[in-house]
Image 1 (cartoon, rainbow, N blue to C red):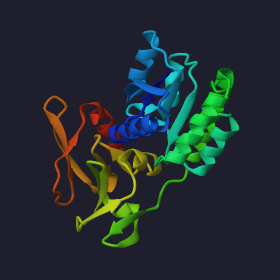
Image 2 (cartoon, rainbow, N blue to C red):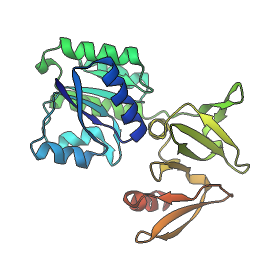
Image 3 (cartoon, rainbow, N blue to C red):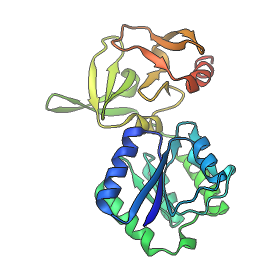
Length: 256
């Protein structure tokens, strides 16, 4: 068996990947799932091991590359990411594989086949490779999505991202709520993907369920001890509760 970890901060994405892996290759055994840099570092520092990692670039508390600043990981990695094609070339250059979200079965099959065909030394990142990826990914994030495809009845339309007051997840679906009118549209992205492709100066993920637009926020209610709620400059059907671990970052993001 190939003992495998999934390091992914989007619960639904992790579940989907787990199912796809089990259906694609019975030799792969998912032994655990972590959603943060902190938990992953703790696992390896406490002697945890694995034969293969599926690692998202963006985690709940930072970029996955930060893991390697705290602990040496000799495990081969297949990255999962919503980054653009420029970044993809960086992954290709360093002889590791990646899965571009939303993950397709044929891409997963290709990645696992490549992993099995490589010597372990060929598929482990050294410091030179890690630094090159950090630099290239930093450059690749200079361009963000300006509009999103939305589904309206049997039509596909495009909506400028600055027209969004906030985004929310409902089960496996994600929706855009427009500013002022509060219209709701189904979009073809998870919140985790949106977090990677939207400008972080303009949009902030306040919890697993919500991403808000800076221009739509009017005030915060409550405190860290009892819970914080984001209030927008328009009526909403949702209570935009802030996760406790994101409260401090949110206040700093708004205070500028």
